[in-house]
Amino acid sequence: MIQVKKLNKSFGRVHVLKDIDLQVNESDVVVLIGASGSGKSTLLRCLNFLEIEDSGEIYIQGQLVDPRKDDLNRVRQQVGMVFQHFNLFPHMNVLENVIEAPVQVKGMAKEEAKKLALSYLEKVGMADRADAYSSQLSGGQKQRVAIARALAMEPRVMLFDEPTSALDPELVGEVLGVMKELAREGMTMVIVTHEMGFAREVGDKVVYLDEGRIVEEGTPEEIFEYPKEERTREFLSKVL
Amino acid sequence: MGFGEIFRSTMSSFLEATWVTIEITALSLILGTVLGLVFAFFKISSIKPLQWLANLYITIIRGTPLIVQIAFFYFGLAQIGINMDSFTAGVAALGIHAGAYIAEIFRGAIQSIDRGQMEAARSLGMSQRLAMRRIILPQAFKRSLPPLGNQFIIGLKDSSLVAYIGVSDLYGVALSEAAANYQQFETYAINGLYYLVLVLIFTLLLNRMEKRLDVDGGTR
Image 1 (cartoon, rainbow over the protein chains, first blue to last red):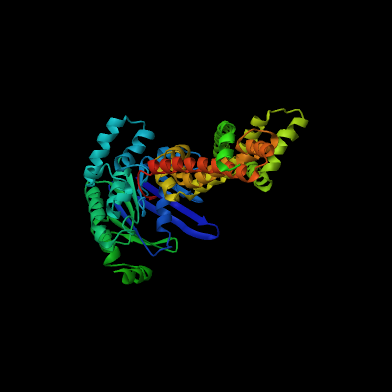
Image 2 (tube, chains in turn green, cyan; image 1 turned 45 degrees about the vertical axis):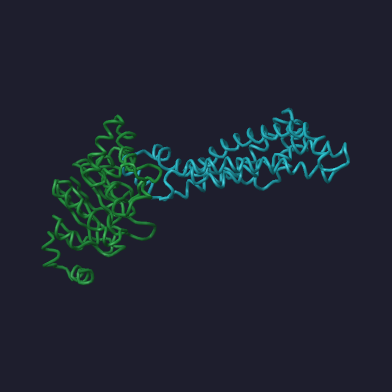
């Protein structure tokens, strides 16, 4: 589904990603963990080309993507993204947020888009708030709408960039619940998170990054129960 | 003679001049808003020459007095063969003047929109241009309304300077009325009153517009 080869990325003099190799298979849930500044968010943002790599190769569904030549708007339609700060469009209500891209980008008829949007809002439990504006929603509700908005483009893979980090603790569960449901349905997902319990329960593969390198990757059991690397053990002892 | 008498004797010419002031303000602010939008885009554009052009425009306009700009447009351009009547020259000078300030207002508003908005739009497959039009500009426009309203009120009062190139606007009429009746105190006080009423009406309209656009009640 996604393959990354020898990816390097620097911001100015800071070398953020160093020779990253990553494989994301169809229907897999890949969880990226690591301290802040380890490069995990940057890696995720490279996968839909919000950040452009300096060198290396990224294949989306077997196709090598050249961000300097290819139509990234087309690539991004297949790669949905959910952000830490939701980024709902505040001048539009919930329904308008969700139909915006299908109508404006795909040219879908409004009525059809509304039906589609409502089905996804139903899925995240927000259909009854279709008329609300984002300022009237809680953080958890905003994030669920943001998930529906990304799903409405019917992407092949979903990226989640710390989707629960900005939420009050009591609202984390509702968002993780929606994500679990997506995983169960076989959605391919790459998730940056600090929710280790979630990573262990839902992840097919856990990838630990430190200082821009992949230190260790494996099944949740391998990483959480039997970490091979000293740095992984150290990190886990701090967060678990 | 008292206020009442002066008020009555100047009323018909002041009312006529009120229309001139409204016309010249409206036209110059429309011109200024169009110029402001264009140059705001130039300034945030990634094309360097457009940025330079916008910076040059804003620097010259903000760095020179409006009265000099008006004189330049009317007397200066006439000398090199570009003849405009005083009304047209006034509108052009005021519009170009306001445009520089409005450009900065729009640029600031556009850049104040959270980066995440553009990222979210792009992540959904929207092009830069589409995201600008559908996501950034509507929010930026709303955010620019309070400073824009402020600029419009300044523009209304600035329009009084065109009296110096012979336009019979509110201030122009005040000059000639005061010269004729020798009642400087009353005449200019009444003149100020006309401007004040215009500004109050303007403020009311702007507030109403701001409220109408405030559909979501918040910024995020």
